[in-house]
Length: 140
Image 1 (tube, rainbow, N blue to C red):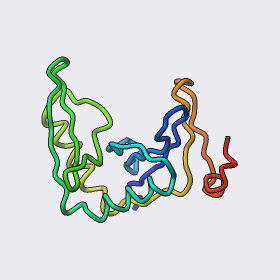
Image 2: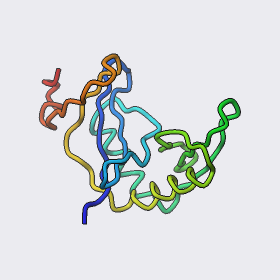
Image 3: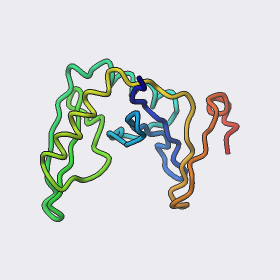
Image 4: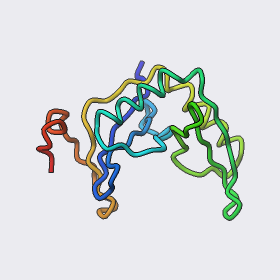
């Protein structure tokens, strides 16, 4: 049986360039980290902290007053650590998504390496960067 997995992204043009997302076995995004990190290792450490603290997280759902759609977020020690990947039209869809995220976190694997993302190049495919390039700064 395939497990959900944490995928790491290096986003070009941002100060905090490293981010993570949680993908289901069928490649759907279950949620994403709420914060950016200055290094790949700091981003991996954040995922480990979220996995280790999953029993102490607090979750909340809210609706956007302007567009009327739902979103969720997860906090650990009063710090928002994860958020929904998109908005939901119905509360029950949002709740289902939140539960799927919380259920997947403890057993999800951490993917080695990073996918390079360039937001200016919309529709472009992410480029996988080997982990050894990250520590040496050789990736371009």
